Image 1 (cartoon, one colour):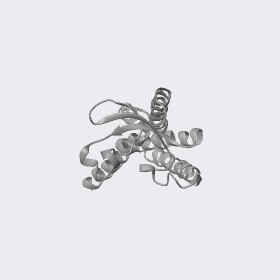
Image 2 (cartoon, rainbow, N blue to C red):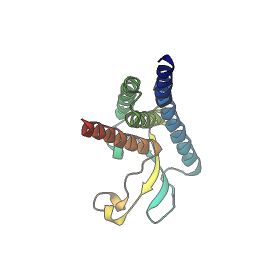
Image 3 (tube, rainbow, N blue to C red):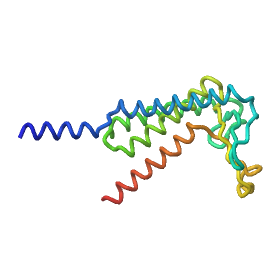
Image 4 (cartoon, rainbow, N blue to C red):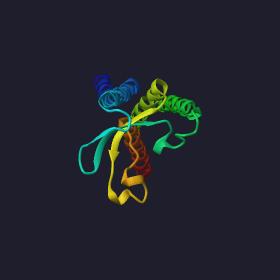
Length: 178
């Protein structure tokens, strides 16, 4: 019986990533985010870009606000507000990860959000703004966005978006099981 129990414990540990594993995933997002931003900042000047396809450009943009440049022209206080908010959210997410390490989809989502939020915090602290560089544009977006260009974003923003989708998906899956 003890051998069977030991095998069961070993098997459950193999599928259990642990807090450290999820934090490593978040750190990987941070590294990739900062690397891509550094490469873009080294290659382009502010406002400069390069057409990649008919609907996608690489550009260098500085976002002093939040998502979609919300409050970008607010006078500077927003830098510290969004930095403090993101740090508080990161601490909360670490607590959630620690409490739910066995929920893979949920913790993957949390780790992506954590890494993305931390990547953008690093920009705010280091530069005073967030570096954005992914510029998607379609003519049908013109009624919503100037020239049909969706607001520029970065890898951290993408990780946050995918992470939120995973968190919602996990909750929907859990809700359907009950």
